[in-house]
Image 1 (tube, rainbow, N blue to C red):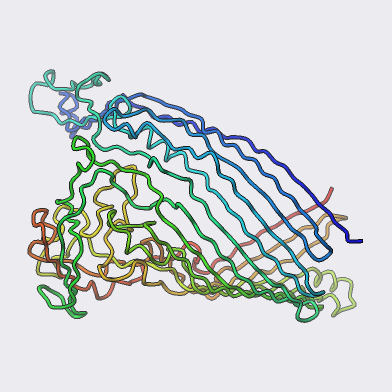
Image 2 (cartoon, rainbow, N blue to C red; image 1 turned 180 degrees about the horizontal axis):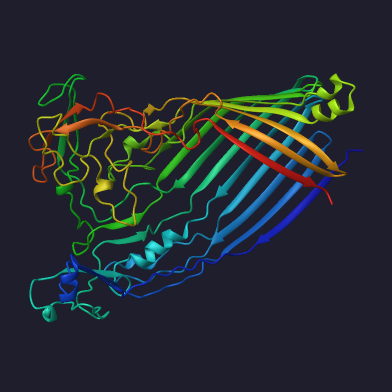
Length: 556
């Protein structure tokens, strides 16, 4: 008779609240000296206004059911279903733009899960599974939609300077504060909101693994893991009110040895993103930037791995694994042109193709080398361990310098407006939005994140000694050395750790804020300390370090 076993679990987990507040109405004066302070002749004045505090609760509800079903002695199934959601309050509407009065809650977020373990042979196990996993949204996204939606009654600020008149005739008069009804407080032209069709990001994940005992106490596993991120938030500012780009910029790539322009080389034509030529008014000419939180992006991660474990009778245990993986992003996770996401199909910033890990634990039975009781006591309980990790570097993007260096180039009139030449997202961002691809424009004609940093190498060792103090009580002293080889591991990711500026763009009309169709010469940013130069050491790959610890454990 076939044996069957089932286990059903049902769970409900509650909600959390979020409360946020900010202070307004406090005036700030700045003075250049004590005499000016005594006379009330201030240099600068600033004061915020608006509803002084707001609070809201964000209930979070979750339900989970799981069924563990043992179909046979060789097959076990796991089936689960999860439903969880948040309930955000709806923000106040801005009469100038009614879409601000909504936060699109998504209440139906069913997440199925399935897994199995099958033993077709006595020393072979096959495991696999699939699941869908939703993420919970940060409450700051809702806060921005509530606070920065435009009305002066919600949030506004006044800045003023002294006009050199009589102190009692200035507006404001030191040390007074402006009343909240003062006409100086105006509604902001820049607003933030959440896209009406916003959906919560989620991940689809699957895995398959075959584990085989190849020798006694030795197992070998080969498997694959795959996940797909959907509706991922964009890391760049999207301005709903920005006018489409109409004009062009011709980039001419100078040869590697060029130090000035003009020059001859490959020609690339792209939209003109001169900061001075970008304009708003596409939806509402009376508003400035309408920064919308969007979720257009996707991510794909695929990997294959092999790992082995070996337990030996002489106190030695070994484990090793190798993973080959690719992580790709697309559809605008980071973008520089909000009207065209075609150049955002690129390696993810977390992409690491190769990773090799080796771990070892050795417990020598040194006490067996002597018959002396004192010697056995001193030699007993030692443990030596090591963890070694070697992985390929992470990718980084090649960028255009936001400004030119007059010491190296014959022109210094590029991007005079102080923005970025090839990044509308950066030029359109506000305090509530992200700044585009690392705050600069990518090099035209070169794939995003197409360069990789150096390999990361780390070898850690540990030496421990355990002391049995009494029954069920143990004291363990341990010394650990991290990065024993003192290998320099450089952090290269998301604009940190390396010089990303590949070219210095120059030209007679480059970034002048007036010329509709511009020509820019890309002179290589080469030489010591320029493109590709490493800058800082990674926090996860510090120089050699030592650590000593003591641990006391007992069972009552």
